[in-house]
Image (cartoon, rainbow over all chains, first blue to last red; front, side, top):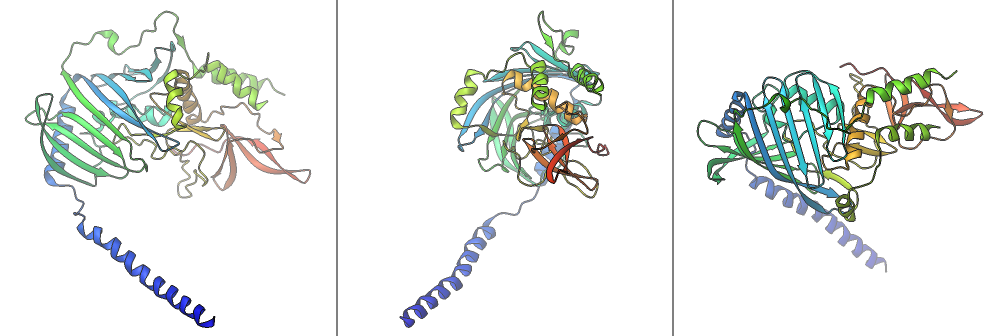
Amino acid sequence: MGYAFAIRGLCLAVVLAAAPAQSLHAQSAPAAAAPAAELDRDAAAALDRMGAALRSLTSFEVTSRGTIENVYANGQKLLFGQTTTYRVARPDRIAADVVTDRGHRQFFFDGKTATVVVPKAGKYTRFPLQGTLDEVLTLANERYGLSLPLADLFTWGTSSAAQPRSGFRVGDATIDGVAVEHFAFRDDGTDYQIWIEKGASALPRRLVITSTDLPARPQYVADFSWTLAPAFGAASFAFKPGPGMQLVDFGAAKSARASKQGARP
Amino acid sequence: MMKSASLAIACFVLAASSAAPSAAKADRAGAKTASARTSVSKDQPKARPDKRPDRNVIVNDRDAVIIRPGPGYYDNGNYHHNDWDDDDNEFIEFVGKTAAITAGISVVSAVIGSIVEDQPEGCQPVVAYGTNYLYCNGTYYVQVSQNGTTAYQVVAPPPAPPQ
């Protein structure tokens, strides 16, 4: 009896002693095989080239057709379509039209006022904003929680664009008959890939973002088609509500509440 | 009282709040907990908990900046953030509520100084400028003692963090 315990104890001790060594071995093997994570020169230069190409556009329309994955409580991922169209006239006019399988939103900025429109519900709201297009999108995000898809198009090539932790050139590809180069980048929480036009224009033709900080690693895919120097009418950036559309005025809600509170003893 | 005030505001914003049919079908997989990011460089919420996190979200002793987990707000313990494919009314309500909270406006018109005996729903602890607050549905509370039991008093929001 006593021996049996002793032997069992010994076995346990041996197993325990062996276990750390094994796991150490298992961990070190892939680490040694992983390539060094660095931002290759040609990949960094491609980002710069693309940023400069985007900044050089004073007036453009870009449509992105793509898909977005949502993650649900049971761990399932569902894929939805998303088409985003931006109309832009620098320095300070922007209009976005976002159509998903489940909704339609519009965003207008005319240099002074941002308007968010939900056409199907017949409602819109607006708030004052100021700044460059990149700043306006940042403020819309911070103050109003509006993270417009593909805001990168307005950040790349500006001082607020951060360099990724690592990146390399994957190879050549063709998208819609256009010769492109395929690059892969990694940053905190995201892996992303960009397919950049070869030649002088260096515009992005495809963007894929993988959210690596979420266990399900959902992915967003966007294919771009560009219209350079389009003719925009004056109505392109100033939202004109249709008949029966309702302005949801949060400023009015605020003052109504304030007067109600003030009336209390 | 708080509930009805909250509802009044919600009704002001919303004519009706019925989920789109396709949304209802997607919910077969449970509530949506996350979406893929649609932008690399903007600071989008990294994790999107549908329930408030267990840890204190808000404190940064060094510069007393109030941190939200992302653009969005807590309402009754649920974290809301922008989704371009949310129900239409929820989406526009989201914009307004986030704007209100960003501007430091109480979404729920609780009267400062009033005391409730039970802890409101959906609270998260907040420490700002050395004071412990409970932040519940857009209203700040401090814990007080009333007749020997713990109660919760509505207070003014802590000073806005430096911009």
